[in-house]
Image (cartoon, rainbow, N blue to C red; front, side, top):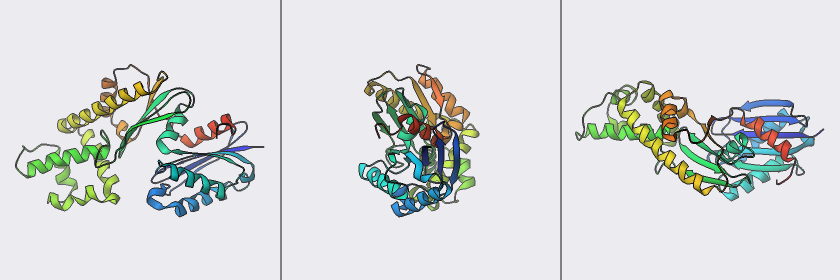
Length: 296
């Protein structure tokens, strides 16, 4: 019996799914570990993969394909290093395919059709693929230079408006009450929440507070971000040679009814909009079975 392993790792958890030749799930679990080698290093990633191996040790020698999707492996050298480590931990004979997390997530949602994935969470990025698995990317320039319509971007833009009020160059706004409630009394004492990496996710989480309370200023700003993202999406469609069949969305910003409604409104329903599948690791394992080692 041959087995197929799918792995999906992000900044806080890593999930694994093992299926057999009939696509029956033999193991499915997650570990609460940061699997981004850019932030934790490849030694830590290897340790994490060894922990996964221990949970499926009885199947390891018969794993034929490993599909692994990870944050922080966008550069070619990172992909090569990750593939090397996967083979060291498991078996040299296994076929291994490593994807940057956005590309792997898109493939898991749309393995054969040309499609686009929009991620709006702490940060934002757009990726697309054609029918031949050629990938395209737009945005994702990081918290300083881009990430429009993301959680951190929204809070940063509102804080800039709050600082303008504090400097006396604009009027007060109801949305600024969130900063008065959640941040330090002196705005300068709260700057670390934007500049220090360990606080970035918590700062981004405030975006849900702004949108849930339906502050007009927050809605106006996030709508501007959505328009920018959709403009990039439209540009990407023209770069993809095949007809784009679907647009897939994922990320915490889409949990806001206002955000999702505005995104749909500005997209204008030209292409079907679909929510991303949850268990990316299972879908990757299934794709590994379908490929069965071909093109890997």
